Length: 503
Image (tube, rainbow, N blue to C red; front, side, top):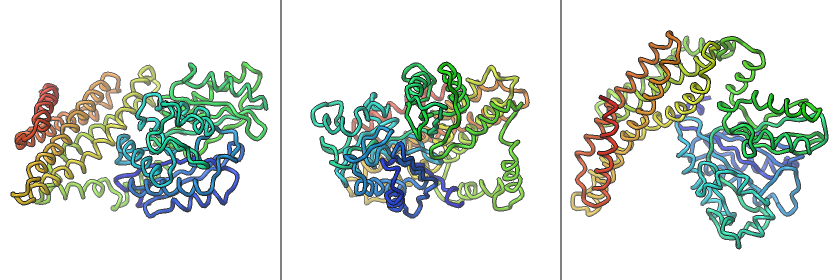
């Protein structure tokens, strides 16, 4: 499992419009088998005539793997002959990138845009960007892009401005259609089967549960007839804020209005362990539940604690040794990012533990909001540890250019601006961590105060340290253009606002 310990890990879950011919899906999966890419799961659904393949890997490798998978799908799938319950617009229908480890949602947006451009260039397939990668507000919702499916897009792409793709020409691929590429948080594909073949009931329940028509936040839903049963098919886009059990209970109550009931449910693709823990805690009504009560979790913790290679010291020691080395990087900026990431981790731990305590149930919304924000901040701060070192290395490379090189002043300025922007971003994220940790203290048990105090103190130190790095780099910039002058003025103003928080 060494691949999983990579500092950067991205998930991609491409959906292909083929769920009946295993040979075709096998060929697509094989096309995506590249070094550094791992196929975690593959689901085929004959009724929907759709397959979902779950990949994980390093960013560069997974981008190329997905591009090749789209190309293979274009070779083997003919949408003019495709029939199935699920709406579709392309042979490779949707390609979402999801940040897992050491990668931010913004990084996934950049990946989506690169992959989209390459799909259009290599295969003449028009590409629409959706969710976080969307270039138009209405395209954040995939349903708006897919409206009318393959045939509707084919007929209108050249004549309706709303149908113009982000990449590619104003015509669909004759057999492979169009593809939507995006970036999003982890999504759970969850379907509930009813004890009736009446698909109208499933459609009514889907309308009631989905957010777009007044239902639960972070739920997308539609009704289908699958294997002779009415099915409520859903995508849960944020299971922390709208958990699985809440969705199931909502559907059960709605179904009762029509004299039917759920008989089973299914997960398409993979599901985070935390989502199942939430459901177990809810339906079993377990008091003070947390993941440490799970045997396998406790065993893994015990084994890690007793293993010299997996000890906490072994995990942090390489970074500390590099920090102590007689080299310019990593330096104070990386240390500030690491301290801030630790502060966010401590606050995340407290919010998670408090959320499991029934005596503090009235604050659940606050804990969930904190967990959502801290999860993102933690990942971004971890990425900044390497980004700070890389930005300073860019400065050093610029200084190594010959002094008579006319590009040297601009290269030095560009490097210094980058080296200033990274710690400034760390300072802004740290201010957010500090605010969240401070707000958690009044709604946390006294036993959590020491952890929160440690986190707050680390965040305060990280804020001061990051701003010190901003100051030293700003002093080094000698503006030679209006752009550089504007950067210095704007950065000083942003830094001054943050310094007020550190006093």
